[in-house]
Image 1 (cartoon, rainbow, N blue to C red):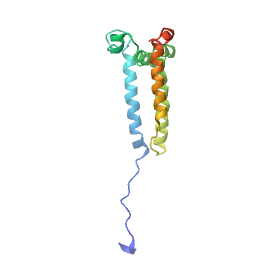
Image 2: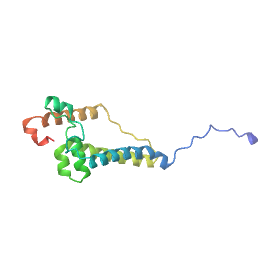
Image 3: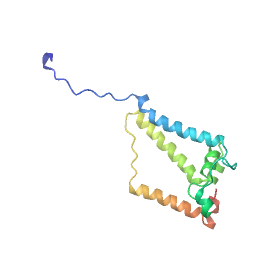
Image 4: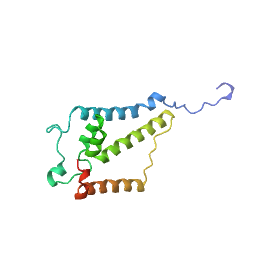
Length: 146
């Protein structure tokens, strides 16, 4: 090497903004496609989607029961009907939107996505889902039925 220059390690190019946004954009496209399908194919009409096997076999509402009807109402802008069909699903839509937004902001800034859900958060989420399921199946929780 002239002048005694020592070549450095081969440089690794950082991906550009558009490359960093490909995965979040793909996830958003998949979610938007699913919501578009449920918005177009009404789950309130029988025969379009399979029935919940837990509800069919036991008569117990699972935490996801009413989720498709909730998504359909949400797509059509009827927030009251969406909450009535499955309030937990609507909360999930909002949480997804917030987390996805943070993901995009971090991707634009060149930072890796970080969601640090420790054991306490995961246990809390599990307890929330269990309590929602229990309450919606008790007589005083009938307002949570889909």
